[in-house]
Length: 435
Ligand code: CTP
Image 1 (tube, protein in one colour):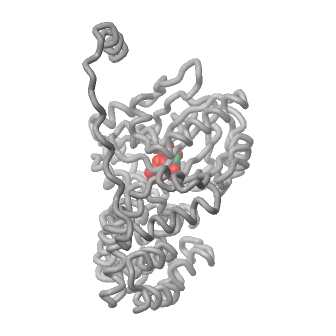
Image 2 (spheres, rainbow, N blue to C red):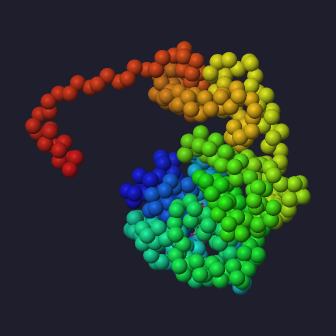
Image 3 (cartoon, rainbow, N blue to C red):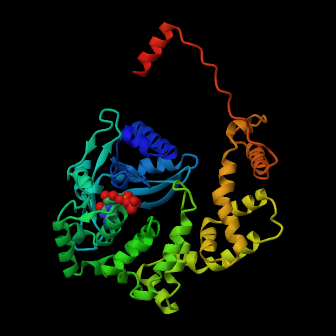
């Protein structure tokens, strides 16, 4: 539990407490599993929180979605799982502990409620099949029926059961993505299982939507270009677009976007930021016919397609605002950039020929954001306003503007406290407490 708390950022820690409280109130057994556990134990940054509930997960998710700032993003009625977004953009999944039975590769599974042990055993890879109890009686208990912890230690990727690729062939792509992201070796038997699955051409049965969801996961990887290259080598990328090979696969463009994206903080909420610019770069060298084929192969929704197709037009408007000579003071640039959608900023960094626009966006991330964050809540409250009220935000904005424009100096650092020699009795007490 100490490891978990120290791996989560403050917003993620708040989500864990919130979900724990809601599950306790509902009398449900709650665990943390999947990617969150893998990333914590493997020493990686935790991206999303995967909660598993023995019982009615959707009811718990709906209850949480009623809380202020919590959004229900999507819901899977078959698998009884829901994706939520918590304040600060923290993504979390609440899913029912279940088993999935597949009649044939790529088929819709028959889902039934199960224990956490059974749930873990039906997962893709052992490193994704570890759970941590968040219940009062057994808080902190690690459940690892397939010995994923040892595989993490050996840096090996191993399927949790022999038919993992037959049941859900999208796992062939997931294997490549995880291998690249975490720098793992694929274990020998797993490699043989994947080869057999490929001989049976199970990858051809991957549902188009599963390919689209996988594509979204790939572009939000730290290095999509490396994952795409590996998928091309494994001849799996053609499932999405047969045109994505050789010079038509714009890996240089994707790598340029990756570098630009590093301007964002690792904790930033990137929802809606990656997809448009990365898909724009990835389709840049395709013909209209090939783009249409990609949309068809992945069952991309109209909204998902428009996010990259209409991005240049939207970004041009943003560019016109950001290059305006009317923006003189840093506070004006700060305001203009913060009002621009993240996807447009990333696209402009990728493509805008206007140097001034590039510099202004970079200054925003590298200088102004930092300065703005120096304005503390205490400073704002000192002006007699209550946190959370519209007046509070107005005062904060004016203090930020003043700081950015150099009209207000940084508050003096706190004066060092005068250290008195402690009485022997008090010193002894303090020592005991520390122990
Ligand atoms: N899972 C699985 N088979 C799949 C997809 C997912 O067994 N085809 C299981 C894995 O245990 C996985 C968990 O469901 O860890 C959650 O899946 P997902 O959210 O897609 O991925 P994460 O593992 O959380 O990884 P990330 O989001 O960082 O890619």
